[in-house]
Image (cartoon, rainbow, N blue to C red; front, side, top):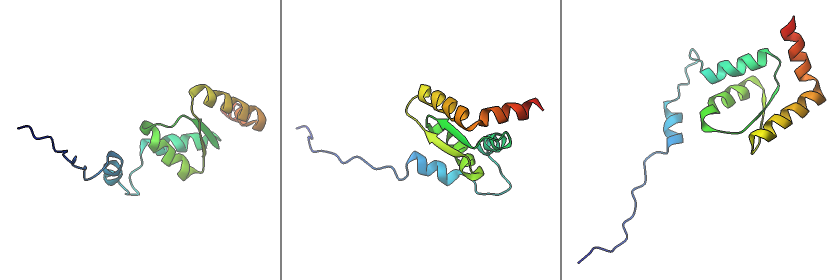
Length: 103
């Protein structure tokens, strides 16, 4: 006779996110690529980024938080581009960055 009893699935001991965080070093002598990106953005006068969230750029978000850069998450790439354009036009931040780069 066939065994038709429901089998309870085995639960993984740790999720992928928990495993990744566990492996992440907290050594102050080690800097991640994401933190380097955030430092470069801050160096150029960026105070806000418009982005579509994804696990592959979480380290950049961590760096932005540490650098005091505001993160605005949107649902579509086109929205991010339009929001960034509108923000730059209203605040003049894009112009300041362009002038800084020219000098």
